[in-house]
Amino acid sequence: MTTPKTPNILPPPQYDAAFQALEGAQRIVLATHFKPDGDAIGSLLGIANALREHGKDITAVVDEGVPGYLRFNPGSDTILGKLTEGEFDVFVSLDSSDEERTGEAGIYARAHSKVVINVDHHPTNTCFGQIHVIVPSAVSTTEIVFDWLNHVGLPISENVAIPLLTGLVTDTIGFRINSVTERTLEIASILMHAGAKLNDIMARTLGSMSWKSLQLWKLALPTVQIANRVISAEITQEMLKSAGLGQYADTAGLISFLNSVDESRVAVIFREQTDGKIELGFRAKPGYDVATLALSLGGGGHRLASGTAINGSLEEVKARVMPLLYAIAMAEPQL
Image (cartoon, rainbow, N blue to C red; front, side, top):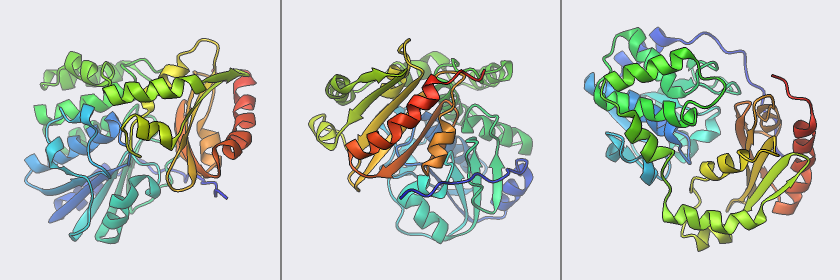
């Protein structure tokens, strides 16, 4: 049975304490969540490149490494796909609402580091670690990294600006979500002035798809159904194998596509895992909250984008979760 998580009351971002810990460290490890998206890799490389330029010894890691479509980011070739050795003074966790999200790399990093710094923008963050740089109002973790670097006076070079803008673009879906503000665009402008090319980043992320991903869409789309304003799809292990994709394949593009259907208010993808669990990805239209449901099921995320994983078969999990989603989608929107 999944144990619900309860987010802690978050303190103000501890920019100075976090930087002081890094300044006093000889060896630093950075990690982000498995199945990384643009914000995960962008925040990881943004702070990694900035600290390397500051003279720090940095180890950066994410389970299974960097997805192909994000490897244009400078420094992506330095990110390890696993972590099995080394002792560290500080571990910086990026864009992960809870410890489990950092996967095997996070398990090793926490066990072999003296201090954990938690850098994240998810409102469901469980406040793990000793030092917290958590800003739920930020549209992306790269926005937090941008503010942190400015606060402590570290320069934003082109190699820092590109991954930071990558995270900003991808987590706002090209500046289209309702939490985008004038300041979001101001930050983007500053990063562009530092050398990040917006059109290139948009084309490589939002306007890019691999052939294998398209094959997965082809297999998954026949499972799509809509009822009570909830649109759903299924991805089985057989589909992933047929498409030539592994366990860590990114399906964010598919659920965003489903969420664009006019008649739906909530979208969900049920995805079989190899550990006997079903991974759930939720998306919602403005006015609807899927984060509370994800949190109650042991996951987390944002009001409009969240997820979790539940033990059980595909049919068992669907029977449990779909009525809960119907209740959300059929309610009056809270705008």
